[in-house]
Image (tube, rainbow, N blue to C red; front, side, top):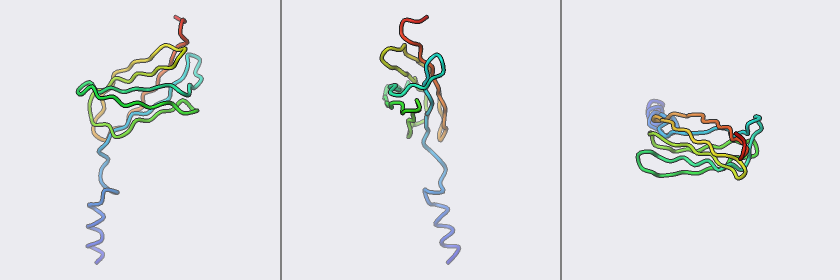
Length: 107
């Protein structure tokens, strides 16, 4: 009976290997202050599909359940410039993509 239960657990999704990928990060201003309300959009280079998240009060965002591939990560907030980064992510990988936005009009 114990062997049957153990073999059932081995095939259980709860103990299965992680197969989805995740991109998360923090968006800040040029002085290091976190920016809530930033729209972060990722676009798949292969399919053109997009996913969007908005940063929380600590400037954090997370986009989950991504297939492996190459993505463009854009961050934008009214009154600030935009940030654009290209990244590749593999199966089950978790990447941190932090960005810093400059106040619009500053060089």
